[in-house]
Length: 173
Image (tube, rainbow, N blue to C red; front, side, top):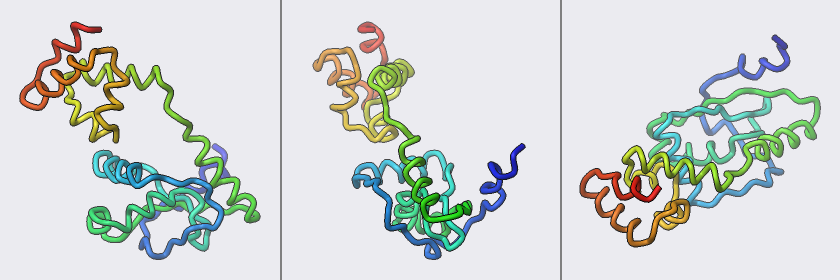
């Protein structure tokens, strides 16, 4: 194994969130709605990605995770700590490249795979409310990813909020 590639993971540690500082070059902006989704993801899945920092604790990747970790409920639940790894680039350009490539490598969601995900969740009997919460989508967005009529969708929402029925959706697909 290449030690240069694995070196950051050898530095994994939980540190006081207040030690970290934002960089001045991050072009990525996230809406409040998506920050709330990030909080939901951390609460549901645990903290899965450490924040990437320079040795001086300037954030290269993970600014939004760092941001939400300073807000409730995560601030209390994490005791003010965040997981980090240290990356040592030879110059600031390496840090800037790291920020941009981390952001761009995450990609975007394509329509057909998202439609398949929603279909699968509905087939498993998941409610619109649960899908909405867990995926950070409004019911209207979920509806647009289905191939059912508005009336059937509203009926499905009503049935799933009071009980558990997947027949309407399965009849349609």
